[in-house]
Image (tube, rainbow over all chains, first blue to last red):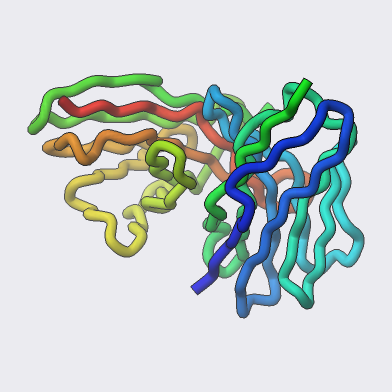
Length: 115
Length: 117
């Protein structure tokens, strides 16, 4: 069974600083993809970043970047220049094509941003 | 683009009654939609995959007779919680799958909070 593990239930970062959220996963699939989603207090799930497993280059979206270590099955999210609006729950998720693109979510990391 | 709506956003019902939650893709067609359940301070758990024109596929442990899913059109999937009980109180989130930039992505609705009294 595919599992996604987020070992940090809570993290805190000073505004304008950088923080890294950890995620590891377990899979026997070869064609899969990974996501980071943000869930603010409104509970609307917002896609932060996506990584295809076949791509060696780490995905980047503005202040958000990932460190994808395929052999180690690790997929961490780095948030640079943290802003107050980044405060939210962050979920790491895994999906693969032969499952019909179903997603398995990690347990989440609550990020607090200190002004 | 790729907006998904849910209705209602919040519903309170009495134990034993049924409640229907709608999930609509507003600006795209979705042959596949997903229904998740989220308990307070917990992660999203996939309940079922809804496919347009065919029966839904339920995850292990989800009662298909209790959580009825209908995907009658390419823009609408409904989840009906039948004979609801207090333990069914939860936050229900749907997502719709769309082909975007060379890959499938899921776009999430804003969720529906169900409270069963």
